[in-house]
Image 1 (cartoon, helix red, strand yellow):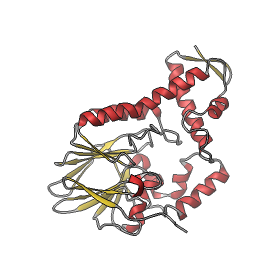
Image 2 (cartoon, rainbow, N blue to C red):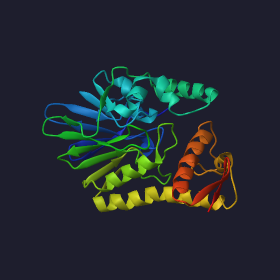
Image 3 (tube, rainbow, N blue to C red):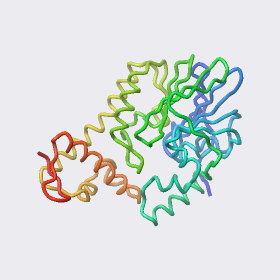
Image 4 (spheres, helix red, strand yellow):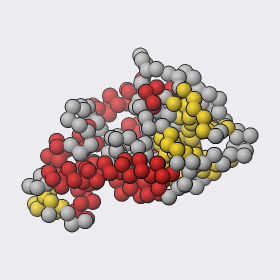
Length: 298
């Protein structure tokens, strides 16, 4: 039984309407967009809030194939578009769950949650787009800005002439960047953050909690704090590697989740995060493999 609240609070930014989810869009909720032109309208990232209260639209854009961004997709029998890097995960729930990289028992539980909690059925009709694709709604355009790292296909959308950049799960929360799925990449995430810094907009919309930030200067200040979490993870790992450690010891020490957080997703995400930080620190000469499978700060 789904016990989640549905419904949203609309907030206007030019002709862009942010459909703010419960708890300011904190997971498992999210913030969706409704964009009108003179010829057509579209929704971005139909969340749980849109399951029972979906506004009409002519097409749907998905920033990336994660459950909290597609829970309301069943409300729309219109064309659905996502970056080609996430296309198969949007088309198939099996592919989506496989991307979490969970052990078999946990994967089965995740699949059940995708179906029952988030209404994910898969959209085999979904279409792929690439970086720079433009959706012309009539007097208003929505341009794809590919921002990989969180997932391979993770994308933002620049809406003109309003000057609204939706950055999806570059969400500026204190949790920091998440790059713990099978298709995630720390290197790509950092490149995407650099790309965001270069885009001047009036408003910057996030998927969760932080909502909409006005002004490039304030957005860049918050962006710096957000990616500063990556540097703190590096520092935490370097301090822990004062003596030789295995990847499993790093996983137990934790770089991402606080000790009280439990669940089958924790260790796989911690392991992939640890490996990516190890690779980066080793390439910079800050960590060395002193014997097979054991690493130490230099």
